[in-house]
Length: 119
Image 1 (cartoon, helix red, strand yellow):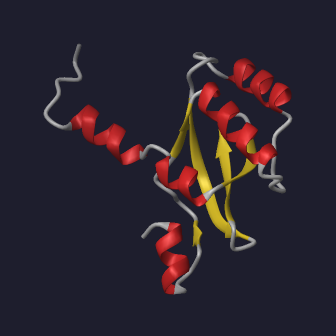
Image 2 (image 1 turned 135 degrees about the vertical axis):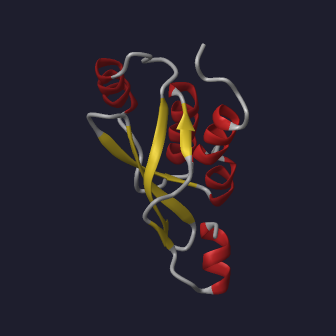
């Protein structure tokens, strides 16, 4: 169940294995700029994070950054922890931005849904 729906129904409002990811550094930068404009508590020193991602990644400009934890914070935004292999960081975002994040399961379905992976 999505976080916003959990909040509306007053169930647990934490996801310990969310099915979401941030799609590359441009998307991450966009979400961080929105967090800064909204004055959310968790914002990134984007230069340091991008440098760490570039050092850890084979594809530093377009890594998929999986969300490993998410929770509703202050009843107004979603706090996530995302990772890039050798590190992780926290970022707050709106409910709409969280809901718009691509799903990891969609990647798996596309890759393994009858497609020959022996190329």
